Amino acid sequence: MEPGLNHILFISAALFFIGVYGFFTRRNLITILMSVELILNSVNLNFIAFNKYLWPHKLDGLFFTIFIIAIAAAEAAVAIAIIINLYRSHQSIDVESTEELKY
Image 1 (cartoon, rainbow, N blue to C red):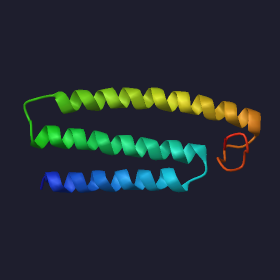
Image 2: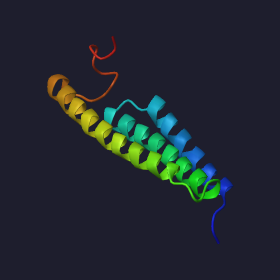
Image 3: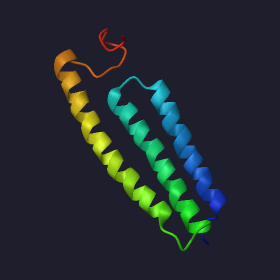
């Protein structure tokens, strides 16, 4: 049995809200980055679902998804480089432990 549009949108909304919850409640920079990736993947799931069920003969949703995956990969590489530099200078990646990151 193939899942319908409502099922896929429910899973996408669940992923989105899990990502938002993780973004606002976590203090570790790595888990915050993972939460942002969850949010981006939920958007990708929306693009694929709407492309399949509403416009099955167009490829716009797939192109947007590939573009978002490429942007997410670049964002993850830059974010991990920034996190490594912050760890080297502050010896912690906890957001609330360093006073310089608050202001």
